[in-house]
Length: 67
Image (cartoon, rainbow, N blue to C red):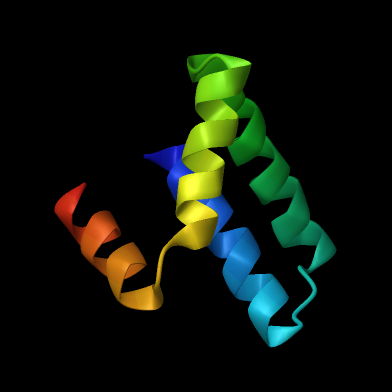
């Protein structure tokens, strides 16, 4: 779940031209490290790419359904 949401967050930030605050960036990097530790490199990149390709509606549905 985490890797998909990380990918979705990356895509959303890019789409609106936003830059992550440095403090948030540290938390984000901790999330990336945690997700990478739980998956193989290939699994992580696949999930991240799937998250990046999701629409906003899909992201919300995914997040709410996975809670």
